[in-house]
Image 1 (spheres, rainbow over the protein chains, first blue to last red):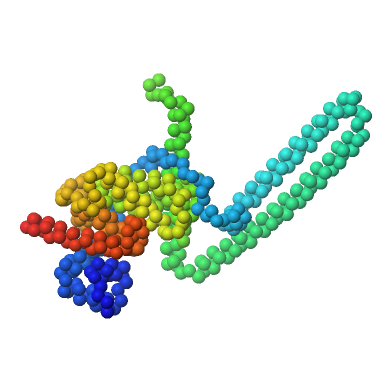
Image 2: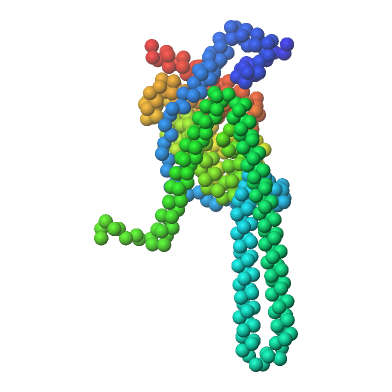
Length: 243
Length: 183
């Protein structure tokens, strides 16, 4: 058996990594070496009191008052992910309902843009009808207008069909996801014991409470920023109480 | 079950989510504050140190690559901030120097610490040189392994073991001296 020095033996003991022979050696060393025994006693004092400060009050350190600088946000942690990978990760992370909303908004914006464009075409056509100089070109331009109108309508129809298909796809995906989640939750609820559920709900309540505290801090920070902005606009605010 | 991982919060914070940063802050404010308290034995210094640490974490968050535990990374920053704090406060004192003999009622925190164990721990920590104090703090209160502590302090694991052993031996001597005086 190799001879272990006191420091190594203590370290192994503290990390719970002593094997049988090392444990015997440790006990022997404690009995034979009073200095080692005293060191172990000191270590025990700390080990037994690791949570002595658990109830120590955390000071109100006014985190909303200190300003933190801007970091370099262009350097994300997962730089190895391509945009496609990130997109697929985002889609699979339960945010697909936001995807539906954003696609819907994009479609609305497209329809509005197309309608505005056709309206402008109509205005232009009215102007040309009222102008005799352009009358000679009427027939050909009328045909062009008609073609443009047809194309625009065709595009709108295609876009609508595409949007509807996408919406249907998203709705299906969302429904499937919800069904899977519900199934998973039901299976979990059925399989877990009452005690586990109790603990989970306690965790949930704790989580919600933490979220509430975080929300309060977040809003306090927002108000603080707003206050700073107001002071920046008007450096010498009117003291209402003096007026 | 409901806890968001540190990595998720960091990722969100890096993309500008202030709420995620706040969550990360509230998750670690107590361990960091208590680290500062045990390292400085003074709540005002602990508050200043905590603020220094979190500002530094905020500035360097983008450099965290997620290779090790976030807590380890955070406490390695805490170590640098703590050393800097002591260099500002006592520029001529080395981190291996033993501080002046501590008085049991030296700081309001010790008076406040109604619990005898808290008083004993604060007093014991105060009597150690910074380098040893940090190892005791990280091993017993931070619950880090020797390898993790070595990585945080940029020394070898054997140095960490030696520092811990010396610290505990020194504490034993101090308690014997105090016992002799009290008689």
